[in-house]
Image 1 (cartoon, helix red, strand yellow):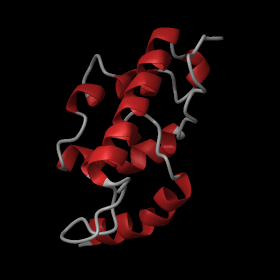
Image 2 (image 1 turned 180 degrees about the vertical axis):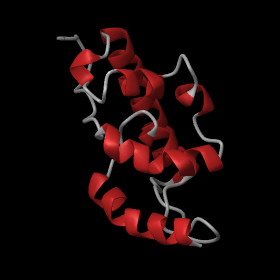
Image 3 (image 1 turned 90 degrees about the vertical axis):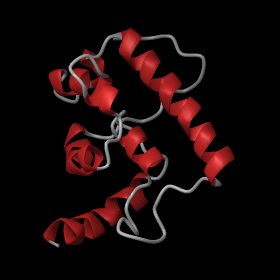
Length: 124
């Protein structure tokens, strides 16, 4: 499905990559609306992770959400995407987790590297 966007659409994280982070998002109570029955993440699961199966409405809403929240992260948090101390050190911040629940992360390579930290966290 072709959709008209005001700016380039953010690349999608695969559904499989997003699902890895779902338990942490649930634990941290992040993106409860997006994960709810009428939310983006549910629509993404129903589309089996295929962006072409999402409506233009969802894709535009996602793009706007990601753009708006990335600006907030840059302005209010200095672009910080990962916790640097405490229980969640090395894992995505709450704000970054919200982006993951919308199938996007500004630094997918760093996100992939943090999966090892997540696995260690889950083993505790």
